[in-house]
Image 1 (tube, rainbow, N blue to C red):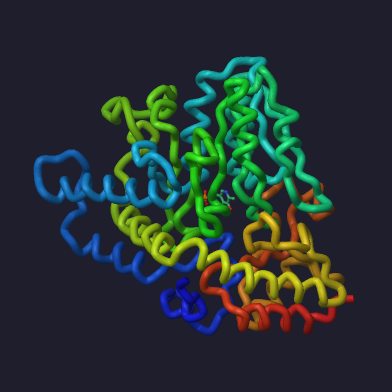
Image 2: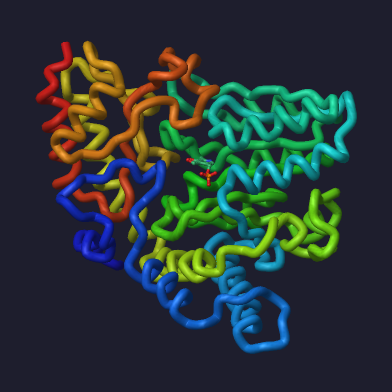
Length: 390
Ligand SMILES: Cc1ncc(COP(=O)(O)O)c(C=O)c1O
């Protein structure tokens, strides 16, 4: 299995001796992805699609190649691969189209574990259509969202279910296959937000069975972009908001304007990096490093860890508080030691109150990824310990 202990050298952005636990908000890009983007820009292939000259044909070939690579990464049909600037933008395009087909009485099920990009677009679609959003609640004592909490809200009026693949706050991984089966049993469709899951687990969209799966390549060592897989028949049937010359079938229905070709070159390389490194190697490395972090945090007096204390069914991400300090103060003091962590709600806004956290101040979030090692964890733990929380 690939040894990840020397991974840091693959990430030119890891400069200045920083320990970067901010991966859940965006990772550093891997060398091959950076090079692929630069190479594309140098190649003379910057053009537009479906033209009669070679540079344009190179754009078409790139689209086919990156759709295939991401299809391999996600276990999904390349024909449904929609590329956009971000997952939030992709979700807005999707739900705007869906809203046109919703009527009063229709129901959408969302969850309190989700990032707001899988909640607010649905609230807006409900506002515009008269449909109703029902919220499935995660268990704040564990940070876990039981499949039953979602399934219990699914009924004959349910049209769409929007559930996260993994929490970007505390890493927990709901059983999206079970949720999808229950939704499909009543004819409802399912969107899985795979943004936090993709860098940490092998994805098999076909096995999950969902209708839409979203991911953002800047969370997995690639460029800032969002990829939304939409089941191809569904994609063609959506009442897409689009300009008239845009295609009437396929991903172009939900892609607004000329895509970022350089980003697509970078996405292809980043996805290939994940496939070559293998998820098994990434999981083994991350579990070991994250276990050290979690155990260490639990042992420091005055630290409250939010979310589960164990490693089962979770991505390597946790939130914590230090008594006597605001999350922002903790993040600032850790930055003095060159440890980067996030503070706040991290857009997981529905989860803050159930966790007993301030809606804005939230908590401190630390995420492990492929380039984080034991030395980074030890530095973070020493910096938290040195705060002397009471
Ligand atoms: C779980 C999850 N979903 C969605 C998003 C939104 O992604 P984007 O920034 O590409 O819109 C994020 C970003 O932090 C996330 O963590």
